[in-house]
Image 1 (cartoon, rainbow, N blue to C red):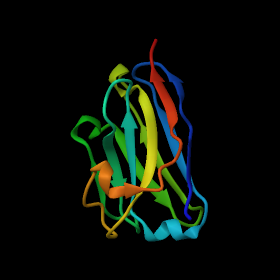
Image 2 (image 1 turned 90 degrees about the vertical axis):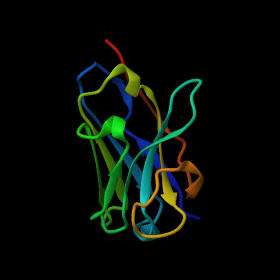
Image 3 (image 1 turned 135 degrees about the vertical axis):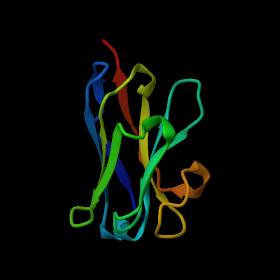
Image 4 (image 1 turned 60 degrees about the vertical axis):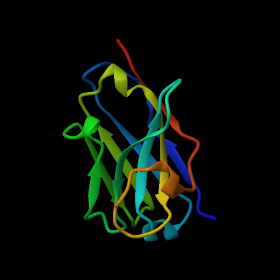
Length: 126
């Protein structure tokens, strides 16, 4: 069963940047669109971004458009989330997961995703 492991989180100052990584356990990850999600304390998990199997199709939540960039390297079984111009409201645990159907990035609804990683904490604070 495919497993995903997130890394790269930490404490970042407002306006700063961080790159999150999502490492897949094997090359079957290339057959899945991958999404990034986040969950802040007391809030529901929300979709942040997703990328198609080949990387040519991406989708972003409105609250990160122009600030975050998703990418993938299927030769390394990796998906990345470059986060710039961070705000305090970006503080959350960030997760990656596989889209259960389709190759394109057609939804950011968490119920359509599986193989969730354990998450990585991003804290934006001065």
